Amino acid sequence: MRVAVVGGTGLVGRHTVRALGEAGHDAVAVARSGGVDVETGAGLDAALAGADAVVDVTNAPAGDAAAAEEMFGRMTEHLLAAERRAGVRHHVLLSILGLDRVRGNAHYAGKRRQEALVEAGTVPATILRAAQIHEFAEMIVDWTLDDGVARVPPVLLQPVAASDVGRILAEVATGPPQGRAPDLAGPGPEDLVDMARRALAAHGRPVRLIPTWRDAVLGVEMAGEVMLPGPGARIAPTSFDSWLASGGAASPR
Image 1 (cartoon, rainbow, N blue to C red):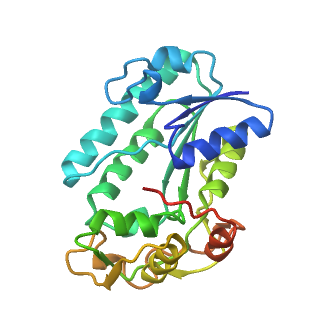
Image 2 (image 1 turned 90 degrees about the horizontal axis):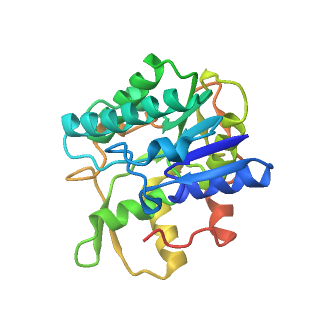
Image 3 (image 1 turned 90 degrees about the vertical axis):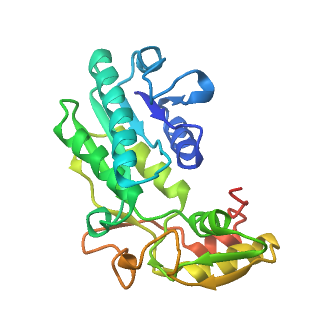
């Protein structure tokens, strides 16, 4: 199959392109660096020509909820329209585990808008909601770092390796549309602050962490078990510890 991976040069996108290639498929990385702008639609028709399936792993900056909804909505509408013109038979969207349980996060509002458009569209689709990837903890550190100090909320997650997400997206894209695929998570729960501490130690970064919900990137509505998978979730094999031990913790900066 010919599969276009939109956002294919990003962290999860690269793993998806690699997994598709290893399985014998023709994977095309679609990205702004290659002259394609999903936000405006420029270059999409040429990029999707001959594609049997499209995997959307794009992201967008989130200001407020309205801005995030507008941005994700515009990108998704352009992509779905180009897929219809190209005769694409399967649209796969990477989304976020626990999306419906978190109402106050602007990024999540944008992703809900994205999901709604995909579900209402005419291109057969699969939506895969995945837990945060292992790199997420150090990303939070970098977003909040100020004078050697970072504020990290004590969120309980069940993180998943980006390589596992890519492999499963490749599997989903080359199979029949499922509507909603089972949620995807890693082997076990992890505390985000502890994840950040271990990742920083692996990179030799002397950052002082403040575990707090105050002025945090993530809201207190994510406390408790809100972000953990429910029954029926698909559990990927790579734990945070094994990912660190394997050297997969190359700094995301």
